[in-house]
Length: 172
Image (cartoon, rainbow, N blue to C red; front, side, top):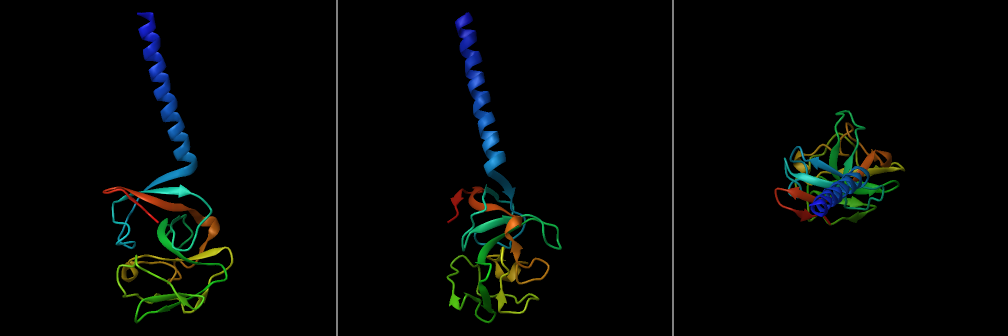
């Protein structure tokens, strides 16, 4: 009987340790975020849970979560288009985006319609900053607007790595 009690206690200790390790990993490396809005359609949907990997290493095309440093005082989820020193230009008639004179592939963009915002183009991205756009260009407040502007690298929380609900998908 004592052997059985020790076995049960050992099992519960292992379960406790497992959940403690998972909790620590999530608090240090990951963040679960609920998407609020349609600015990242068709990639991310309203009320969809996403997993964000806390990292400072962001690459062109990554979907990132930023901390509040905008006039809305809201965290935003957008796609990294250009970095410090890059020149961004947008053809608002065709929706084409150019970085350093080269048209970028935008298979993820919802439509070719792109609203102009209140920023004059072309834009040179300040050092230590990133130019971001939503995938739903006709319904996204992003770096095309002075209310958001270019995001300082210090304000990036991390990179979206996957959606969790309603259907899991890995984000490239």
